[in-house]
Amino acid sequence: MEETMKQRHARKWAESIIEIVKNDKRPVVRFKDNRPVTDLKDMLNSSAALYGDNIAFLQKWDPQGTYESVTYKEVLSDVNGFGTEMMAMGLKDKRVSVIGQNCYQWATAYLTVTGGIGCIVPLDRELSRDELKSQVARAEVTAVVCGSKHREIFESIIADGDTALKYIIDWDFDESEPSDHVFSWEKMIARGKKLIDEGDRSYIDAEVDNEVMSILLFTSGTTGVPKGVMISQKNLCSQLMIGPTVYHVDPEDRFFSFLPMHHTYEATCGFLVPLYKGASIAFCQGMKYVTKNMVETSPTNLMAVPALYEKMYATIWRQVRKKGLEKKLLTAIKFNRASKKVGVDMSGKLFADIHAIFGGKMKTMICGGAKIDPAILDGLKDFGFNAIQGYGLTEAAPLAAMNPEIKSYSDSVGVPFPGQEIKTVDADSEGIGELCIKGPNIMLGYFNDPEETAKVIDEDGFFHTGDLGYIDKNGYAYITGRAKNVIITKNGKNVYPEVIEQYLGQVDFIEESFVFEDKNAAGSDTCIVASIKVDDEIVKEKLKGDYTDDDVKELIKTEVARINSEAPSYRRIARVILRKADFVHNTSSKLIRSSDENRAEN
Image (cartoon, rainbow, N blue to C red; front, side, top):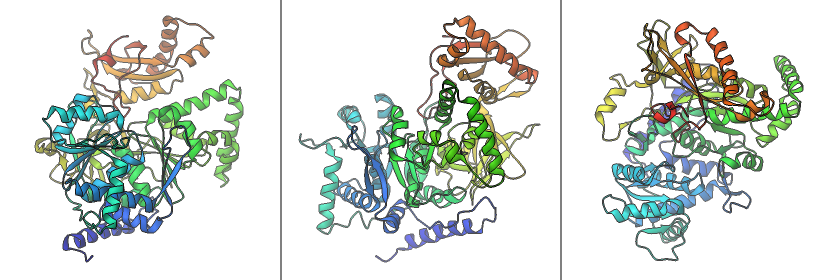
């Protein structure tokens, strides 16, 4: 087909992004062989042409079975079939939700809807029935793609009769029981392929407008009602073209899909970027299968949040100590650091047992979603992994900055990508201000909420993130905390609770902490409280057997006194709570700071 004027305009835009990449003279931008893509349909079509017989996805169709592969050609065929049948059902220009575990069916739903149907609305699989109904109603969703776990919920929502929801496409349903609103994912694809064989090109030839809302994402914030973030395909495709410029991705890479795909971090970086670059994606079966699945699939890239890296790193050292090998490992690390300085990396041989835990081929570990203790990243680097930190937000689709492969700093979130800017505003006496970002990745705005949009996107197009930090002379950004979390002391000093939590997190027996201000405390000084949950296993090792709460408090008291002695007076912890229950987190594994339960003594 001959390109329309809109398609030519989109092509010129994509080519302009590639030119921006090529003209970026910074040494950190090393990988400039990316191709222009106008939208996700264009991305999938071109990837299928370039990498057709390569493995795109690895999935266990039988939970007890082995991993099976799906090639790029097969993905394109399934998406075209699915889209053609969606067209036949009248879903053109409708909003379609997808919900459930990370899997091939979820991926095809996302690619199909964005490839010419309408707007995809990913939903959080951990939400309650009332929360799901609220989001489906707000987004005016017509159909939802899900598994049997959620089918009953959406059937009841349809039965309520007060939303636009009309169809359920269930990837566990076989259509053996007739239904006027529940359909089989597999049989829809088959019917669509038959229509294509009969000459139906309604979906294959459907144009995609890359400037309108194509993805509607509800934030999983730690306070308030979730906002609907409107993302265009221009936003996403700019990320695909500029993302793999500071870290390398090629067809030999394999990404391990662990984080929920409805989060934009996983959707963009762990799903769309690999498909754009011809890499493969292995779906994890769940948290308890992480290690087993990595051994089975031998991934090269892992994207996760600090909680996972912290747990993995702590487990490695715990096992080393149990075997009495701590001194030997420390010696090996020291030797490898020295050998690296002369260009010889012995990581693969010295730490083969550790690499085997991650499947034996792991190269890059990217941390995002929250602040991580730099010592964890440095420790993973000592084992021979390229452990780097990035920075992003849903409103930025999500990439805002990343540490480059060539020169990374574990305490920094990295540098902006080509064509993007980062600056600080309203800096205090220490040079810490609000981080603001600008670029082709910034959202269209908040859904049906122009007032909130105007609060965060200024007249110059900068998005005000609400994160506080600073930028060094080399352009690397550093985050100190969230503006909403800052404790302002009675003498006017700013205390960033995340900084104190980071110090507490360096104590081996502290599993997690939450620092906040007790506003009801009497006295002339600000009362900073640290609620602390300990790792019982490590405490038991330290105290040589059974112990009481008083014993644990003494351990904590010693460490808190040490941390306080190294901190300015206004940043010292005044009171400690020994917490027994787990802290409450959202589905992004972020601590919910507004939760009364997290502040309670239990």
